[in-house]
Length: 300
Length: 325
Image 1 (cartoon, rainbow over the protein chains, first blue to last red):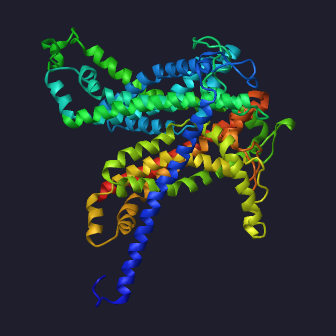
Image 2 (image 1 turned 90 degrees about the vertical axis):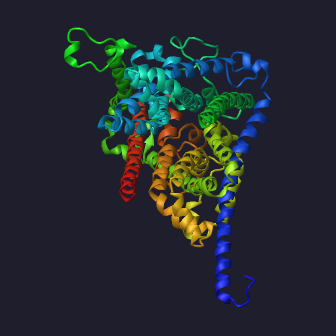
């Protein structure tokens, strides 16, 4: 640029290229900032609006008889979210881990493993409301009123979690070095023993972290619960018997009360804050486990 | 461990099974059965939902695609719902794609190494916010300013031929196709970002360095080396985002305005397959309920088609790039 002998056209072309590069870089940085705006706004608003009703009574009292009235708490919904998500996890995680083990340790690149892998990807894309309808038709409908229970909701959430856990487990198992497997075989252990005693313990932190992310994802689901769990206003710890309720469901119901009742709106914000805290907690624990795990394996 | 020695020829073990063999086979079968569950569940979804929706399919025939959804008169045409689903998902992807690609490039090629992981975690937090919370926020916080904005845009474009139709009849409550599209765009940004990010990360650094060594600016390097290598991955990511957008339910149910129709007025209320199920299932019975389950079947079919197509694109690229390396 400082060389005066350089033809004018060439330097303006260079300037234009630099300018384009600058604009592109600015847009790239801006796109990240744009994504931050809704994140910040939503989190701040939920905290601010949620805090107005958030206190010990809100967390420990039963729901009011009508959501148009003030007072009452969301204790039954917290109980419901915990037991339903817990039951779903207890069903989907062991099954998903086994499925992932099949894909990576037994199936490999065989035609059947490829099919399962493909279908797991397809199943991840099945809308959550379709899962709800599915459990409604296969589980709730044949049992009529008695079919509405926390367990039915857990079945729907479990179906959503299963493919996530399968694929995460497979990805984590891929990272276990083959030398470990070979070392174990050399000692004369069978394949199942090798997987249980050598491969799995090595991959466990990664798998747990993946499972927790799956839990976080389904804990906030509303659609699969709409026609499967019914509704109650008192806490129901029994997933198998009687209808239940959950935080996402209470948010939805209170948000869609016609006529904009303040009591319902505030309850929805409070429940949203409780739900976000639960989901973020799961996500955070998963991240911490991943971080510790990657640091440890990097050191090895 | 000596008893576990696996190398005995089959003849020597006849009559006495080597210990551990049954457990070994059993575990394999268990794992296989778990993998099979995916296939079983998908098949059961198709069978059971289709069976319950059958009264609707047989009552309406091709009328399921008509634009007349009128429970009071027992008419259940899902045309308006399919249209709404495609429109909202289309708007969402259109808004989300450039931003997602931007964030992915920021993470892979622009941001300092040290802050890349925190950025990824931050964007992933968007995926951690539950759908119903997005809906709540959109309904009580976003809808009002959007309604004013829609009105302003509508007034400003009233005399421009095509835009006047597109932006006509803005909803006073802010519940509209556009509102739903905006909120869904935010929700699918993390998924499109993470897929495109992974694709960008597979671009060989030799190619990027070669571009820079030839004197290319960073943007020219991105256009010349990163994009051509990642085109089909970006297509697949977009399609997966599209599938997610179509299945999105609760956030849309709260802000779409619940009026199933085919209209060009994107600032007006509409409805989608997923959101009408959420909003009407509680009070539905008979053919109405069958029709709502049928909407689920249609949605299931569309999303499966999209994921199959997305995987096909990915598989084709894998094969092609495997051939060139």
